[in-house]
Length: 480
Image 1 (cartoon, rainbow, N blue to C red):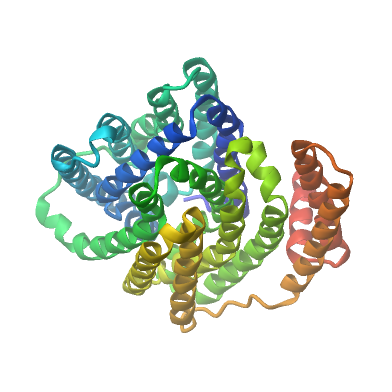
Image 2 (cartoon, helix red, strand yellow):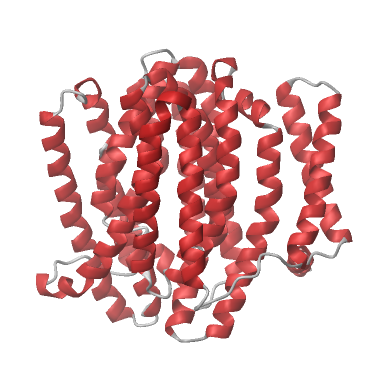
């Protein structure tokens, strides 16, 4: 197999994540203007319910398949047999999820007003299962993934403005979002034949995979609890308006997390392959490089989010959602904790087959999150859910960081961080100068982002930040 560039994969996946971020940035101002706050809250509450069953449908197969498939990807026959086993397990879990969903909707009076929307959104479980996107991650086919994402996102934006025209068009909005996020799974299913042709295998072959998959599944459940329980508990303990407010701040948080995590996601197959081959020196070098890159992108991004929180809320929505500013600031801090936690659990513990440690950390985090939500939501509402997310991510970081030290020690406090902090100070100064000019909020945001980005990287170049200098050398080689 041709060894693909990890840097190129990171750039391609970052492009895909940026595209995923641009989609709501383009569509959210329109949606918040067309749909009411209550309708947006209803959609997000319904989606949070579907996500619990989507978790059952996924079962942790994707993470396990990527990790184990990366170890045997040079052996075509073994990989094809393995892929059939993974898809069969996934199909069984998907059918189980649908049966449970129908049972819950048939017996719950609380969910009755949301029943039709929940059923409509549940179609994503089918598409995600048959899409087998994990096979493309195993082979690091991020060019294909990026191109097809661009095509479906562009088509979805057009459909949004055509189909969603007035209050009450919640189902049309849900359909467009599903088309954007899972429609490409149909293409994935078709082109997956390049790697394997599906056929049912003997159930006995599946037994050896069940235990590790169930551990990853349990970890995913715990993560889901502290990610989606916020919206669910807000919906049950407050009202659709509060859910709609929190939906805006959590949307920004999710978008930023998606973009930043692109650097991590593409590294997992490579790290699993290196750990399996016991190439620990190269493994540690890649982990450290990922850490430095995340630091370089994360610190100025979070500071910028906090400084421009009001302008960002106005940019993606309108004045009705300004209450979301405070929860966005809290979630911005949570973003720092989350990303460093991901380095430990996804880049070190997962390739090292320490899923039991990840399970322990996520269960503790989820329990703390739910308990704090019960206590604080009625007092602080959406700010409480943002705060409990910060606490949960902090617990995750602490446990995974401590358990990872025996495998790979990560240096965060180094010269890279020093140059990043100096560059971030320049970002703060630029943002305050632009604010003094008293531009309209959107103009202020755009000018601040452009000037801060330029100023930040100029400072890093002057201070000879190694990551930036390496990137410049690679770009120069591409041009020549």
